[in-house]
Image 1 (cartoon, protein in one colour):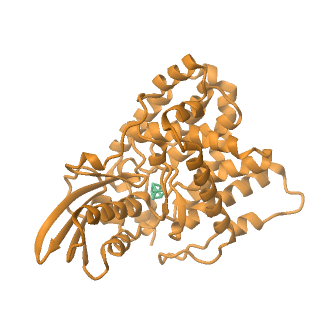
Image 2 (cartoon, helix red, strand yellow; image 1 turned 135 degrees about the vertical axis):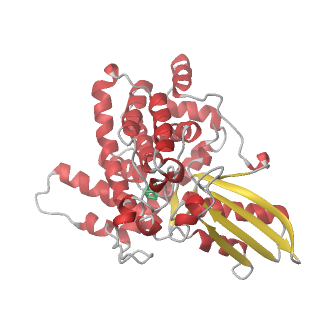
Image 3 (cartoon, helix red, strand yellow; image 1 turned 45 degrees about the vertical axis):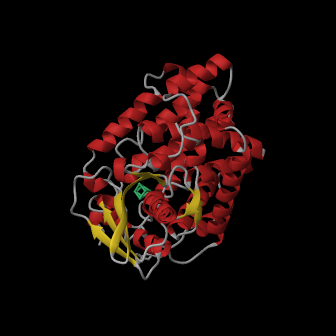
Amino acid sequence: MKSIRELYKIGRGPSSSHTMGPEKACRLFVKENGECDEYKVTLFGSLAATGKGHLTDKVVKETLGEEKTEVIFDGKKTKLPHPNTMYIEGLKKGVSVAKWEVTSVGGGAIKVKGKAEIASPEVYPHGSYEEIKEFCLLNHIKLWQYAEIFEGEGFWDYLSEIWQTMNECVDRGLKASGVLPGGINTQRKAKTLYDQYVLNEKPETRENRIVCSYAYAAAEENAGGGKVVTAPTCGSCGVIPAVFRYLQEKNEVPEKEILKALATAGVIGNLIKTNASISGAECGCQAEVGVACSMASAGVAQLYNMTVDQIEYASEIAIEHHLGLTCDPICGLVQIPCIERNAVAALRALNEVTLAGFLSDSRKISLDMAIKTMYDTGRDISGKYRETSKGGLAKLYN
Ligand code: SF4
């Protein structure tokens, strides 16, 4: 597994795979090949299908140069190494100097064919939760300590920056109002939710309203192209900040404990990213919001000081009950169903942990099994439901 720093990334929304990944690829292309006179960028698969709504063409042109970049949408090519595939070609004086085949594999990470050196190094020696659990039990440590051992210097400072950025994102989202860009007239709702206090409001209603307002705030910031943290992706960036911030305020949790929860959630996200996918284009929304819910559940379980086994159960429940969740964003925008879905997943994360606390001893499904099932299910889902906006809500919405 790679570093958790490769999972939590700070960048601009609305999509880690459709904006952050392509932007990174273009930047690296220029770094390696120098400035070219012309660029031809061809987008395939999901990048072609929803690249307009996700602003892929905009970010590519901004990175390579508006005047000299042609972006071609090729939705016909089917035999692709990954649903998010693109070519970047640079020309000097009309002659091609380099052509890269890039896959944007989720969470802003990319692979470039024939360039293994661009991939980040592996820092964890274990490849399954079973192995990680064994290591933790043998050494009498928690998951956050496991991460600390292999992440090395600067890990806590990095997580502190991540937490600060998540909070700033929620703060901005709670203050904003009006309509999100994209043309479908989606109203921002975070502020309305947050302010909608009613006299004698029941504690559980308040909890629901506040958690949802935080999730909406971050997800709306993402939809508006604001600065977010991938957790694990831009589209699912609202779940973890909503849950952790709510619990921090409610229980007056010190920041150090929140960072331990972030580290714990990071181990789970990393595992799923390694053994399955965090790409909606590859496995549907179960790989984005489903994974965010699983990570959040693990983090909350850590905040409640649960065991390595209970943390496993909490995150497993989240994956298991998001199985088959499709990705069908209306008009290719990361707005409907994405924003509301972040809020619902945040609430589910809080509930899953309670269940895990009660029933952990009698469970039959391991996290590793749920992760493999999620990947197999994702690969079996029709391509219409994997970030192409050709099925589901996206098809019926007019
Ligand atoms: S439906 Fe889910 S996977 Fe698809 S764009 Fe929205 S958040 Fe991402």
